[in-house]
Each structure stands twice: as structure tokens, then as C-alpha cells.
Amino acid sequence: MSEPASGWLAGRRALVVGAGSGIGRAVVDAFLAEGARVAVLERDPDKCAALADALPEVPVTVGDATSRAANEEAVATAVATFGGLDVLVSCVGIFDYYRSITDLDADVLDTAFDEIFHPNVKSMLHSVKAALPALQEAGRASILLTESTSAYYPGRGGVLYLASKFAVRGLVTALAHDLAPEVRVNGVAPGGTLNTDLRGLPSLGLADRRLGSTPNRAEEMAARVPLRVALSAEDMAWSYVFLASERSRGITGTTVHPDGGAGVSAAKKRS
Image 1 (tube, rainbow, N blue to C red):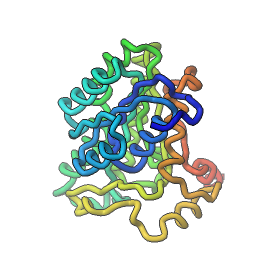
Image 2 (image 1 turned 90 degrees about the horizontal axis):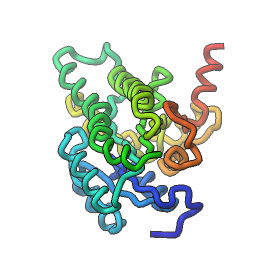
Image 3 (image 1 turned 135 degrees about the horizontal axis):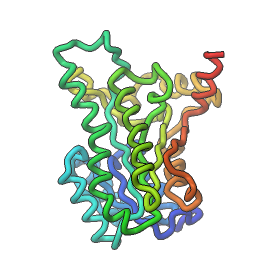
Image 4 (image 1 turned 135 degrees about the vertical axis):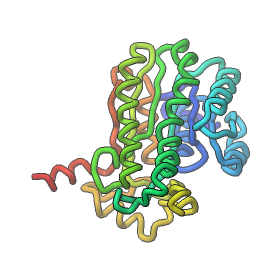
């Protein structure tokens, strides 16, 4: 492991759920660079193998974050390796490719709902429940849940994705209230992200479609936000570093928005 860039997370022990690619993988790298010890939970065996090969010091648990068993195994591995747990990060997600209610057949609605709410919402509940005893024992701990700009501005996702990410907003609020003062809970709501491996719903025939493979994505992303930037997963990761650090020790129940200023654009449109 390289020397800490600034040591913001020196001594912190973290579990990153959904760490095989995209923002989750960037969070792992940023946390390690800032001095944290990191364990991961990832469903994809190939991504797990790549992680283990690239970062042999990182304990890797292969498992589905929507299940209680996988989360409990990952937490147990982190605690056994590091002697405790200070930070839980969830970057699990699946997309619906902007499907409105008018685009969804009633025949697939039940299946599509489960496919998006199980990873996007239920997985976070299982991760928090499994990690909570260790986080409370550590004290001054932090939970970071990945929201989305879609939960704040319409048109950034379909009806199911938006609803699921709005539910994550609710989790941040409820958990921050319930777990204070031992555990802080905050959200990160990324905007569009370059090279993401975010996939679509199998029931809608989108399982092999990657959002990051959209043609001319960088240009389109930069054009739609005031800062005219196309942000990478590495850009997003620094928001997680800040919220996991003691520099944010007075912040809970809130959300950081690394989205290029999408809220400013929304305000201009309303005025």
C-alpha cells in the first residue's frame, strides 16, 4: 500500500460494499491512499479476483449484498482482520435506463420492482444491520450510502430508479436520527459518472447494457451541468473520503452532491 496522501483516514477500518468497479472501486483506492484499512464485499467473482490480485492486503468477500449471510460474512471478515470496523460504505446499484411508467408493461412490474429495490435499497439495510454492532462498539463511526442526483431532479433516471434512490434518501435521514451519537450517517449523490459499470434490469432486457458505454457520454455529461465537467469515479470518491474522516465529525443526516452543479441548472430552469 502506498503512503497516505494526507492521512485523512489513518487508522480507520472500512468495509466497502459493491467495490468491484466504478465508484466503489475508486472509493477503495482513495481510502487506501488516505491511510485506511479496507475490506470489500462484491458479488461478481471476476471482479473479486481482480481486486484480490491488485490489492492483496484487502480482504475480499464474494457474495450478494442483498442477502443477510453475505453481509454478515463480510463484516466478520473485516472485524477479524482489522480488530473492528469504523466505516461502512455502500455503492451497490442497478439502473432502469429512464423507463417511465408508460414504458413499463404491467406483466413485468412486479419483477422489475424487486430487481431494482433489492440491490438499491434492501442491500443497504442488510449491510447496515450486519455492520451496526461493530460500528457502535467502535464509536465515532460513519455510514455512507450512495444516493443519486436522480433522487433530486427528474429526468436523471426512470420511475423505478428514482423511487429507489429516493428511498435511500429516507434511509440516510432515518438512520442518522436513530444511530446518533455513536454513528454518523450521510449520503453521496453522484451525478453522471464516466466509465461506470452500472447495469440495467434483467427483466427489461438490460442486464448487459452498461451506462458507461453510452456513445459520446463525456461530452453529453459536461454539456448538461454548469461546471461543464464530466466527472469520474475517482472524482466522486473524495466526497466519501471527507465524510468518512474526522473532518466531517459534525455532519450527519445530510448529502454531498458531486454532480457538476446540477442543482444550479434546476434552479435556473424554475426561475
